[in-house]
Amino acid sequence: MPFYEYACQACGHRLEVMQKMNDAPLGECPACHQPQLRKLISAGSFTSKAASIDNAPACASGGCGASCMTK
Image 1 (cartoon, rainbow, N blue to C red):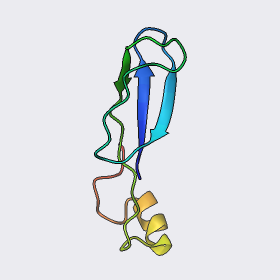
Image 2: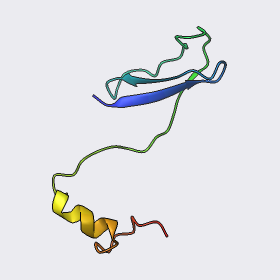
Image 3: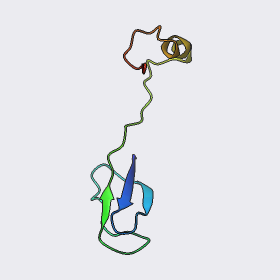
């Protein structure tokens, strides 16, 4: 099951919750009990089976040719 991040627009409380993808989003903040809890958009996190540790030094030095390097 994936983790989802939430933030309360009323009090600023932030939390991370493990939910099924088809579960309804949370609405009430557990800290202030206001219906101001909103799901945050965050970067996905996954590991590719094709990725290997041997590729890490090449990628870190820009040797992989990918556009993952910041300039």
